[in-house]
Length: 370
Image 1: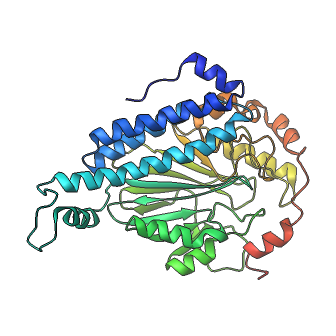
Image 2: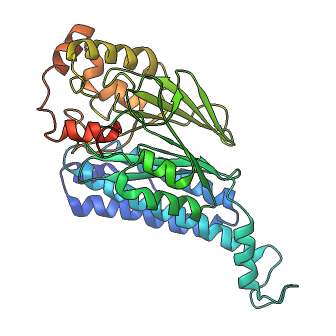
Image 3: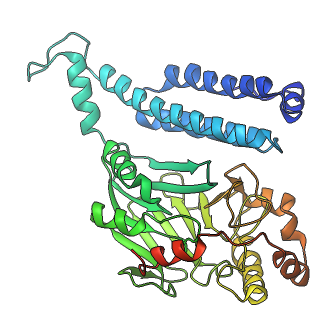
């Protein structure tokens, strides 16, 4: 089983000891292999191993601050990748042991290993698939997730350069992209939403208030999207932009309580979205305050939080290099959430200059400049 972090380990890592940090994460990764390869005889067992590892890594991440956080975030993506490999290995091990001996012949004349591969392809992963895409050069994030049993998934805040990568990953999991959602009209990078929807034969979705010259399916507050055992609830959370939304995601195989929330540019780790990009900064900041306090902070404390940006992006000030958090963690540690409305508005009006290419990127993402 995965061993807890010691105080000595934490202190060394917090002090910026990259070697100590690397040893910690490597210990977690090795723990996954030892535990996972021993028990992953079915896809469900492998998924349990994955969840245990991600929870352990998340707990570890919450202890780090400063420059170390970006290193941890990068290593966290490695852990996630290795965990998904465990799922695949678990499926193959299960197929090999379900009455099929290696070297034996089945009724089609294939040997046992080939039969195992066939069985693996035929047996669809029934758990929820969740795959983040982190762009560390620009501090951006995109997400692909959906129902493994039904084979339907959604991509949120897609980037133009990775359209083919999203489609390839979905295909590798025998899934079809049915919806592509942008949490808002992005101003810092070219969205891959419309192009991905067209290429994948999916529906491109935005909030109903989006001002674009594009064909899209309008989403509304409290709307629910069903993807088999994966359910998405739309929250309209304006402030950063008027069309900004957050997405609450539930995996019914785990239970009826929500698992995580994608907050777009409304709430970041350690910061919030800047309100000045569309103009009317003070009015937007007040609206953002309402969206955060009346909608996001009323969600369960244990809910995991995945924003569209982290440190390196110009869409907010003071963002952490850590790309994920929880509602409880932000309530305790996000300094902007402790301010009164007036203090909040005043603080958000003191922001860095707008990105130089913002207007051009915005027009492209609105479908007004090819």
